[in-house]
Length: 456
Image 1 (cartoon, rainbow, N blue to C red):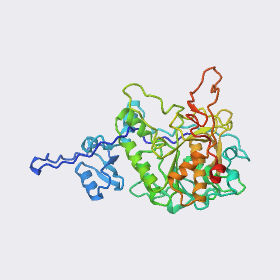
Image 2 (image 1 turned 90 degrees about the horizontal axis):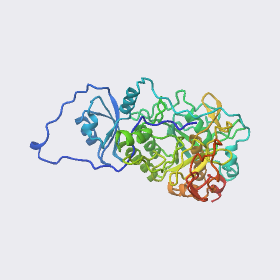
Image 3 (image 1 turned 60 degrees about the horizontal axis):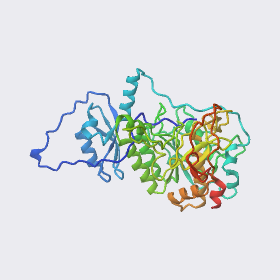
Image 4 (image 1 turned 90 degrees about the vertical axis):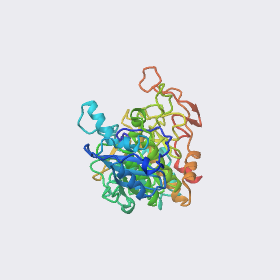
């Protein structure tokens, strides 16, 4: 399955420029500019000084022709609506960014009026009574010690079908949110026809009830935190809402099977550091409150640490490339890097079962309507790690995010670089694995191991 596509374009680089505040005499101040509001109303993510009050942020926003939909004073990030064509210039290009504007610009350039759908990399592989993915991470052996009871995993995704028999007992409605409406996140967080979040949720916590699948942590609780919109994107403002919500609602582990695409594209094309910086602040806020973030590295089969062309900025994958996040690549049943999985020495922390489309050896899990489907992707790999983290959090409720992360890395089963990575048999290597047997660009520290983790 593919990583859900994220934000419609936008940026990454990071190094935030300081806020400029005029302090001169009122007589020398520029006269206030009037608002024309003659453009389409667009949503922006805006950076403020962390700790700035809601009142002050709202006043500054209004002065520049915007209205505040949501504001997170702890991290100085606002969600703002504005129909002012030059709102970005008024606030400052190093402070305001609209993924919606970039999406519209891209569609106009491409001559395409249709919304971009989610990247598809899913398959419908055969049903399997014995889940190869659970065997690979030794989940059944770990269940003798803990099954995840008491741990809460926030699934930042497209929503979870809470009526699915395998998930009905797991979804905690009180901790769920719809971050597509950050101004009112308690609106219904149920999916709208998208199976992605429900599939991810089943890998983490499908009930061990003798039905088709069992989750890595079958007694863990799930918070359905919707961040993926109807076009399959995760805009930075939704991601920020998701991480802050998780930090403030008793979540232990967050699973992020998406990339904030706007962070990549804004960095490389729009030249804005805002999306990555906004999400970075939100992830750091969650980490400081001992919420561990687990994220997929993506399905672009690219080396995330390759040196970019001259004059191109280095664009990290967001959130996978951010500090303290556990980044996860995918392997198939043969424990070799899946062909679609991105990689890179220093960019991958762990590997986990994501499946391999060749031979339809994907990961089977739940989908809306009480059904099941086999799907491949790093989106499937990340929830295996989130599930193991939930087992750890259940075993030791007092563990910090840093302790959970350290245990996952230290107990992983090392996988050396393959001696031959010619997947299509054309005599050429399809990717270069750099590093050592115990730490390399394909598998990071190795394959996540639930049994070793809970024993450790």
